[in-house]
Structures are given as C-alpha cells and as structure tokens.
Length: 481
Image 1 (cartoon, helix red, strand yellow):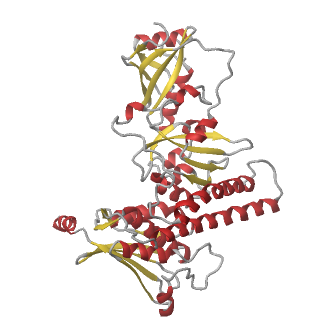
Image 2 (cartoon, helix red, strand yellow; image 1 turned 180 degrees about the vertical axis):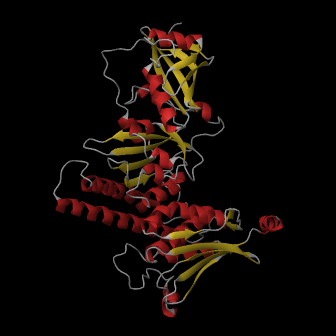
Image 3 (cartoon, one colour; image 1 turned 120 degrees about the vertical axis):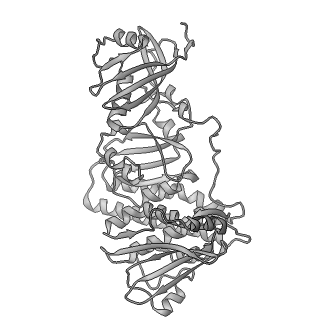
C-alpha cells in the first residue's frame, strides 16, 4: 500500500475482561504481533488498548479514529469498541496508510481548537464537581439549566446521564472523549475533559458531527475523532446563530445587549470560581470569600440579564409563541428532572404525575418549560426544608392545566393580587430574585391563549396553576385508553 490507500473491509477482534486479545482477524493479529504482542496476551497496540479499556470500564460503546504502527508506517482506522459480556468487541474500518511521521515537528496541541469548537464549557473542581457553566447552543438550554442547578455535584450526575451514578466513580481518563445523548438536544455530543494547571478540569461539549478532530491529536496519544458511523447522513450540522433563542423582532436589550453581556459575565463567574476553589493556587481565606461573593453577584447579574431579555421579548409588539402539540405531564417530569438536585439539597420531595399520565395541550414547549422552571424554582426556594412540593396536571373541559403546589408560608389576599406585577418581590430582599419571573410567566401563559393564576392560604402554602388550550384530538385518544 502507498500513502493514501484505504482498506475498507472491517477487521475484527475480541478482548477478554483482562484486555487480552483472545480472537482476531489475521490483519489485527499481525499488527498485534508486530507490536510485540503474544498469542492471547494483552493487546499490544496502545491506542486500541486505551479504547478497549475505556469501553470496558465505562460500559459504553466508544468510536474514534486511532493510529497504529505497521513497522514504521502509521495506519489510521475508524475503531469501534463495544462492551460484550466481560470483554470488548473491536471493529476497525476504513484503514488508510499515512505518511511516516515527521519527528522534527512538535506535536499539535488541540486544546485551543477544542475550546474554540466547544458549544458548552463547564468548569469543574478536582473532584469533577460543577463550578460554573456556559452553553452557547440553543439546544443545550436544558443541559445548562440542569448543570446550573447542580453546582457542587459531579457533572455526570448533573447531566442526568442514565449511567451517571456509575460514571461518577470512574477516573477522568476513562470519561474523556465519550459520546453521549443530552436531554433536549437532537444531536450527539462528545465530551472532552481537559485538566487545568493547579487542579480541576474544563469539560467541553463538542457536537459529534464536527469531523476531523483526530488529525489534531489528543492528550491520550492521538486517539480521537468523530463517530461518523453513528450519524445519519441526512442530519446536517446546524448553522450557528448570534442569538438563536430570540425572535427577530426582539428589541435592543434582547437582540443586541443581552448576548453581548452573557459571555463576559460568564467569564467573570468562571474566573471567580477558579479563584474561590483555589484551582489557580493557594489563597488567603478572606480572598476566597471575596471571590465567592463575586461569583454569586455574577450569577445574579446573569439571571437579571436573562430576565430583562425575556421581558424585552414578551412586551414586544406582535409577540407570539410558536404553538405545538405538547404533553404537560412530560413537561412536569422534565422540569423536576432539571431541578431535582436543588430539591434534594434542601430535603424537599417532588411529587410528580404518574408515569403513564398524559395531558395533551397546545403551547410552545420551550416557553411552557420556562414557566414551570420558574414556578418550581420558587417553590423549592421558599418552601421549608424536608417538606413536599407537588406537581399535578389534568384536563378540564377545553383546557389543560398543570399546578405547582408548595408547603411554604403562603400568600395573603393582597399579596396574591400583587405577585404577578412587574418587579414585585413582596418585600423579600437578598434572595437573588429580580421580581420579573412571575410577571414574564403570566405574559407567556396569556400569549399562548392560557393563563397563570394563584390560590393560597397564609400558613398553608400556595398553588400556582398554568392553564392552556387542550389538544382536543389527542385528549380524546388519551381518554379512550
């Protein structure tokens, strides 16, 4: 073969639970033997061995581009490792010889490229616990909300991954470069864990559809790449937009100012948390407290920017959410999943609709979830610790409804009349609120041809109820079951 030639036929092998190559096609056996491997011995090709170990220990299939040596000539394969019993099955595709490596050239450092391509950045402490988060992609909104509500928890748990509890116990090298599905996103994501000088990590979220990363190398020996075989060819990579979540008629604040403010504020938060957690080096206790105050003030400011951008949108002439067929019970479960960490920290039990409950409605999914997150966040914040917050939903004639009921101190009649007013905080100070959440939520509900109301008895909690038009045809099907 000459450089550039390709071998497309798959080459297969099987490793046991001790990473020994127990069966292999002739070509793989030859490469293994040429690298000093013995019959039924440990896989002698470092790039493949690392891939096999990551797949076996994580329990997740792994696909990446790897480079192995055949004598002095490198061969680049698309390699896939799939856990099979206690071992791992290997399949190598699209092998192509490359030019001999030029040892006079320094190895490329991909960290800058990955930071540039990443559409989500999570700052982690040395225990891989979330410190700060900044996501730029519109389909990572649920992910960002979940991570932001799980500060101080392992990122694998905060992302709500099905294997999160087990992954949280693995060494970071076994988690680096895994491919996952993230809630709320139709795309697959590759996760890169980059150690920071002085301790901690950068967790970068890279769209799996970004191809060709392998040629830039990796800190585990140059074994990275895109899992192209798992991507349907008909799904194009979305084009980045300056402000994908904001309508074109949004005013200056929402369209121009808010996007310009988010990035520097997020950097302030991340840098302050880096200082507070002493990732950049030793620090006097007082300065750590100052940094914590800066980070908390930054989060408050970022929340205020988001609230003002939403206010700008809902008060714009012609504002109209995009109606869709949604399930309010599913929305309740999603909102509870995003805020479950926050509730658990305060010992609050979230009571959700039954798993088979369906409440078809007409509304914009993203806006309905925004309203529920606001209501549920308020309930968790203001209800006493070790109590219950209940989410209930149902159909009432031509309306679908969902209610969030807390066990807090409740509202008086005058307070209930004022609670939806702009900038109204009912005398509370220092709790990080802007007084806009409920005002915006009611505007959103009414823009979707529904309403948001509250009933409350002082000392017995409050019940906020969102009503939307029922999806009559779908509701008929559900009721007929």
